[in-house]
Each structure stands twice: as structure tokens, then as C-alpha cells.
Length: 51
Image (cartoon, rainbow, N blue to C red):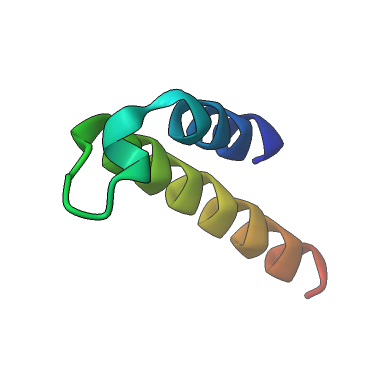
């Protein structure tokens, strides 16, 4: 989960399109989706471990 967020953050900090509110960055969107998927799966595993 940390690696997925780190990849998104590193991209965002270096990408001119990401820092411009009038532009859209497909790479950042894909990295964010990956992070959300990975973090959701981690939360599911934590919830399942508590049962």
C-alpha cells in the first residue's frame, strides 16, 4: 500500500499536468486507482483477520 501511494506521490510532485488544475493526467489517475485498489484489499484483509 505504501509503495502504491509513493508511486502516485512521486509522479504527482514531478508532473506539470498534475499540478495544473486545468489539466488532466491519465498516468496519475491510473496510479491513484492502483493505490485505491491496493488499500481497499488491505482493509479487507484486516477486516477478515478480525473475524
